[in-house]
Image 1 (cartoon, rainbow, N blue to C red):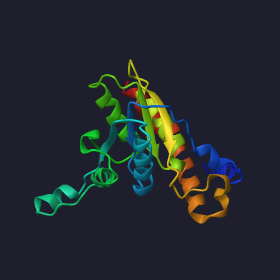
Image 2 (image 1 turned 90 degrees about the vertical axis):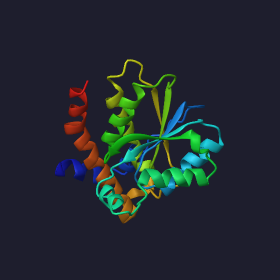
Image 3 (image 1 turned 60 degrees about the horizontal axis):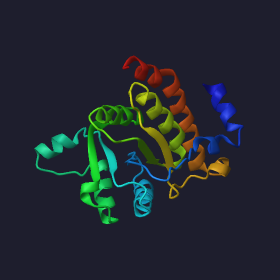
Image 4 (image 1 turned 120 degrees about the vertical axis):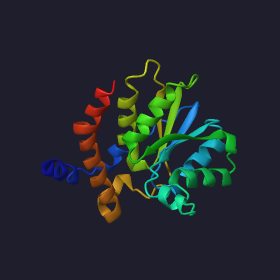
Length: 203
């Protein structure tokens, strides 16, 4: 792994490779992946305004100790709940936003939740993943692997948020960008050696 990371560090195109962008003319559903919210929500808002899709899905993120807080009478808005409220604030109708069950804490868990939800749906032929720019390559590969067990898997597309603070072409000049690149490649290694195998076993 150390050798691979050193190789990544020596490649100036390592940041650009992480960004996958292939936006269709129209999608049946946009899927907002949780994580950094402002950049992703803004991208969804722009795309919705351009009539890219009429539906937006979000997977419920992990509740964790929030459930204990609610037992004590304290309401803490989840990340998916915050994203929903922000999108409504941008003018997306409430009935256009669906929060999928999932209790997800990773991209793989989001992919599994969406895959299971798709088994109950019809008419979803194209799915557009909206996420941070540095996350698009890994997200696409993870969802592609998860959907391989579906008989009628939707076509997958990616829309990297133009509001992401990631400089793909000059990533080595900024500490935060270097951290993003290293983090993503470590996650990709984890996907290739562990998560992809787990997804295959579920088929």
